[in-house]
Length: 135
Image (cartoon, rainbow, N blue to C red):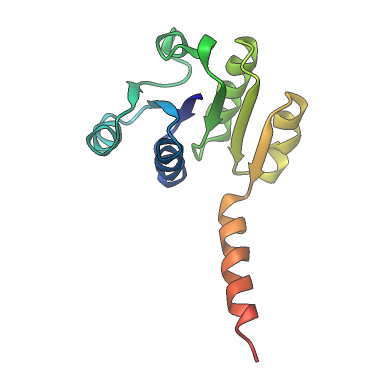
């Protein structure tokens, strides 16, 4: 599969690693040039420095052949814009992190699969580990 990832924060970086382990082709769109360089040193992917709102960045990333667009930034506005643009390009699978619960319906109304409150998910899992250790 060809996957386009928006954002190279911790979630995006880990997603890229997993996707590459599964032999998927990955392109990254990241606005931070230094973060992009770091990812390129560690992974064989295509990378584009810029904002999702930059004209033609999705075309440069060949969005029309993408099997999925995954938005992993901590900026819901950027993630939402990525999902709208991906849907306009008829990308079938669109997945986004959502950082504010109140934004969930905007994403879901687009037909986007959402992961809301990523920090809460991790915290809950950690607590479950602790809770399972109780006598």
